[in-house]
Structure formats: structure tokens, C-alpha cells
Length: 287
Ligand SMILES: [Fe+2]
Image (cartoon, rainbow, N blue to C red; front, side):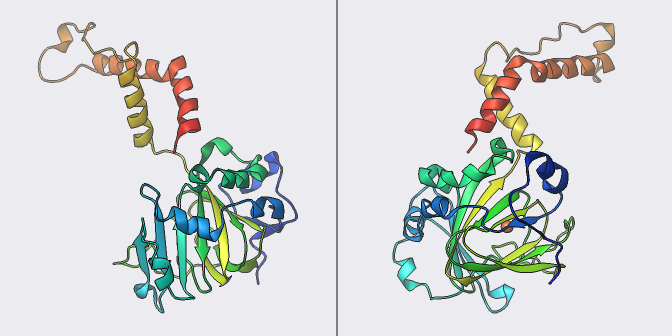
């Protein structure tokens, strides 16, 4: 077994974290989260309960003999589904659990050294032996906290930039093997995985896994959301009047100077105090 995924005795401090790990390389911390915190988090039964609710994103993934046999079903589910599932080879995954089961937000307490404002959600999965979602990569940073049970993980040694997926599945499973390190985790163990590092987890004993995900907006999302905000603020939402047009402005083509005037208007908006206020609120309220 290679030692490429570093095993740390405790969480790194802020300086070490950003210098050595954030967006750079994975690590594992044994017993990084205390049993007291783990015991206060959502239970498997409560998680199943959430997956019955409208407006809560949930999935059941059944692993097959070959990746082509994997099945992903989306919630909300009927309660009866849980009595029809086999004893092995499936997982239930529920997004945004900390928003719908507030005590689960306690899982964030040990991660003060990370950029908490960038946390998107806490996804919780319950899985039976053999359960998992297959080898994949994510566009977000994640802390994977093992609750009850035992899982084995394979974590890639570097980012994959041109990934290939198995076609025809409602699930993104990498079609090619990746080079990585394999190890097992138990209750309280924490793995950090930066974006684009391939990884694959498989449950050994009936498990709960808590995934704290950090996902920034795309520039399009950011501009669209800021646009909605401007729309509601009369003082910011002035209409272009062409007040600086001159003799060069006639005809079909815009003059270079007018392009610069547009640039200036947009830059002024981004430089305004309101942008700062909006941006801070955006990251606080985003869900
Ligand atoms: Fe993942």
C-alpha cells in the first residue's frame, strides 16, 4: 500500500492547510471528528425519512456486477422502497441535510480551518455492504467524514482533466482505471479530496458517510444572480442612454470608445459597495 495519501495525526492548521493541501492533495485524519459529534448527527432512519420528502434531492444507487448494471433512481421515494431493497450493494444519498436536519450542521464544527463560507451542503449517505457510487471525480472540494461502519476508499494521486465516463448511465462512473491509494476508514475518520481527484468508496460494514462539499459559483451563475439583485435595486439598474455618443457613433458598427463606456459602467457596478454587500450575502444565504 502506497503512502501517497498522507495520513495526518490531526487537522492541519490554516497555514499548512492552504499551503500544502487545499486544491493540491488529499489527506486522511484518523478520528478527526469526535464520537460526541457523530452521535448527534442524522440517523439512517431519519435520512430515509428525508428522502420521502418533496423538494429534497435524494438518490438510491444500486451497484451491479459490471458498471453497466449500475442503477440510479432519484427521490422523492415511497416508504415501501426501503423494504424492497436487498441487504447489500446499495446506497441512499441525500443532499442539503444540514438545512433540513439542523443538528447535522454540527459536523461543520471541526472544520473552522477551512473556508466555511464556501460550503455548499452536507450530503449524507447510508450504504449497505458493497454499496458505493463507483469511481468518479467531482468539481468540488469535499471532506468525507465516516460515521458508523467501515468503508474502503481508493483515492487518486493526481487530478484528471480529461475524464471519460461509461456511456448510457444515469451516473458518472469513470470508464478507465486510475492510479491511487487504497485504505479503510472507520467512525470519525476524515478524508479531504480536492476537485478532480478520482475516488471510489465501497462499503464494508453498513455505513453512514457525511460529505461536506465546497463549491463555488460559475461566472455565469454569479453574473445571473448579481443581475437579479441589480434588477431589484433601482439606483443600480440605470438604463443605457448613449449620452456620450458623438460623430463616430453613426452607422451599423459601434465605436471602440462606446465599448469602453459599457466596460466602465459594468466595472463601476462591480466596484460599488453594493457589490461587496451582495457578494457577502450571496455566500451566506446560498443554498
Ligand atoms: Fe465524490
